[in-house]
Image (tube, rainbow, N blue to C red):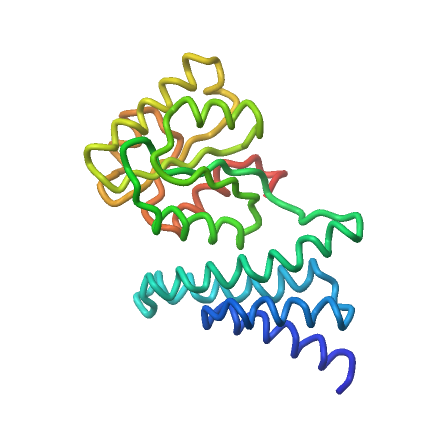
Length: 223
């Protein structure tokens, strides 16, 4: 097998492992990439990322179930856990479009939609810090001060928890942080009108739309 063919084979294994939602195969292909001298950055961008974006496209067009997307997201993370330390050992870091602070707001413990958005954002080139679920406004403030994200993503899957999105934005204003960060809101009951009403910068209708909106919020030179 020639070097070019070997590279293509490994990249294909990485992409297919993610597309198939196979966590073990993703980690195994990532280890093989390192053992065979494949550049870990290329393995991430041309292998793992290609796989998750393919699944995202199928999901957006109704050809994949949400459970498939979740399995693919887990497989993506398994591969990243192997390849990102390899980048660090080379004295490099994965180039990102910027840091996104993501969380499901206080009073809501729904995790699936947020996790899909996080995985898609990672695949699109963002660094994602996922705070989990039932996150109070104070935690968003604390992490904003610490991590200095470009974007905060606020998920709400319950109508009663939507007001917590507004509370986070209001708290950012009170702390003098609102102008330093962009805010995207999303979730089943959330609408474009609600986004405008509470002063968010954008509304993500689904994971792929959230990626598009996140990129739109960056300065042209950052994309």
